[in-house]
Length: 173
Image (cartoon, rainbow, N blue to C red; front, top):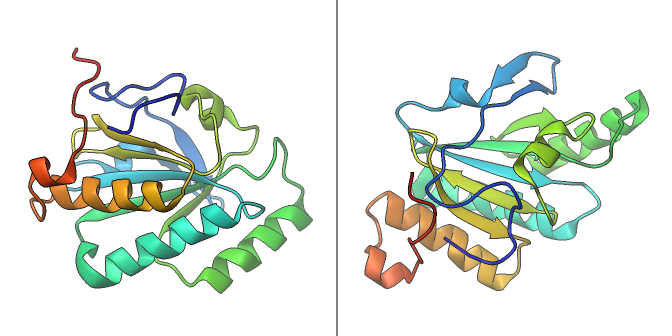
């Protein structure tokens, strides 16, 4: 776990609260729909944040190199409290330009953003297949990229937990 004030309402070891959001086509999905046999990475991102764009592109590169089929990526757009039709069109154009395979969702009203206690954009939650919070990442600097990559590799058994230097202490139910 990357500690510090990452999310005000989540801690490592907790079960992530379920949520329901609409994808870009207007279809509703729950977090639980993506849990079962794979990990889930939830990225709270915005088009106005270049670090968000960098993170989404890095995750896509991880997918191409070693992550494909092992994790679901849920990219939750938190551009603003309310999104007009033209704002959604603009965001959708940027998503298409990114050419990623992630699942994209609107957080219209920022309900999930607030439910999870997101403090910075981008912010990332890595969940195991049971929905347990394993890693929380605030922002996306070079350190954030390393933590993201090491956390995913360690959870997939591609990197020993000792090598990743992750702090696995935290909330124990």
